[in-house]
Length: 224
Ligand SMILES: NC(=O)c1ccc[n+]([C@@H]2O[C@H](COP(=O)([O-])OP(=O)(O)OC[C@H]3O[C@@H](n4cnc5c(N)ncnc54)[C@H](OP(=O)(O)O)[C@@H]3O)[C@@H](O)[C@H]2O)c1
Image (cartoon, rainbow, N blue to C red; front, side, top):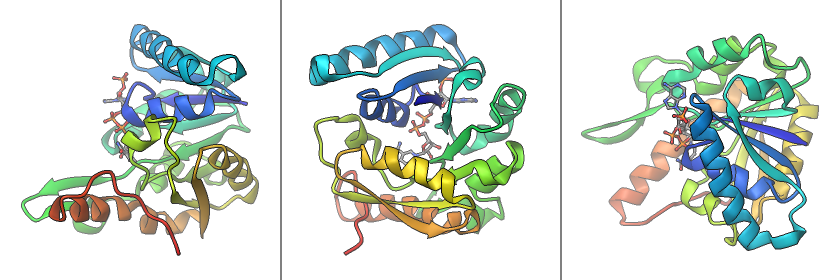
């Protein structure tokens, strides 16, 4: 599978690339082609050190919009504030059968702690905004909100965590579930249609507040 990561130069992008390059061709995206290429080179070295010759996939770099042309699945690994601009550039490039994954969490820090901005400021959940800007809605899946980039990037680490998945399309969920199952120790929990995404997105500021107040690090969620 060809997996494009828009904003792949960030911490989450690095984690996705390192986990999936074992079997898949991953394309790191950036607003700057050179930055994408440098990141891809760096991640490839890390992956080769760990996987050796058993790695059958690859990591390459492209600019955010060029990578959409060839991707079977796109991860939008960018901050919430830049969804509209970025989707605008992807619209004419993305294939009609491409699955779009949103790990995006709309949140901000206040004196009280981290807050989920759609609840507090009347904004839209991230995956709604993605679906509005990259229709059809059925291609959008939301997932990975409660996965810490620190743990994701450490490819030797068993995550021992769940991730909630929301989508209106069961075929898109099935494709993403396969990729989730390839991440060591990560389990997919289907939460419902895309209209449920706020229930997954809101967990991230909650985890960050719990971590800060209790001096814990890189928390995740596991249903027992
Ligand atoms: N970090 C976590 O542990 C974590 C956990 C769960 C979910 N998430 C969510 O996952 C997403 C990615 O997280 P992250 O920590 O990797 O994010 P990040 O490092 O803040 O940003 C990722 C990339 O977004 C690109 N970017 C920055 N400003 C942009 C703009 N104006 N327009 C378009 N692209 C821009 C940058 O790439 P270039 O400069 O190369 O273009 C950057 O490397 C976020 O939405 C976050 O809420 C993060």
